[in-house]
Length: 86
Image (cartoon, rainbow, N blue to C red; front, side):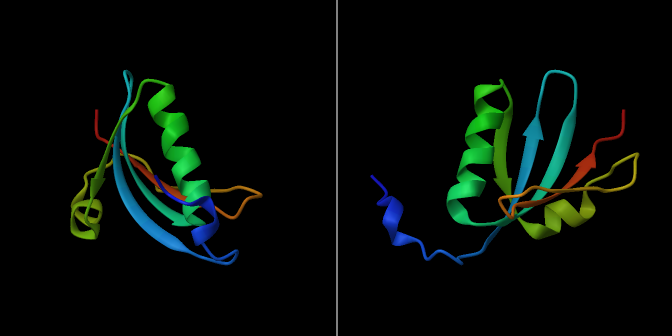
């Protein structure tokens, strides 16, 4: 079990994820505090998404049909999203 107090207040992690939902597939480029990133991933899984960790090379080669969307929230998580071609 992970000790929630092991992270520094200003810790920053970076993660690439492949997210598959019922109606869309996308790649996420996440940056933020590790506990906040974990919360975002749990929310996606709770909403029925399949989430897989991937490497940066896979993110960079991922085909998408829209411009990259950037989301910034008040808890300092930065999410860049690429949607798959349909």
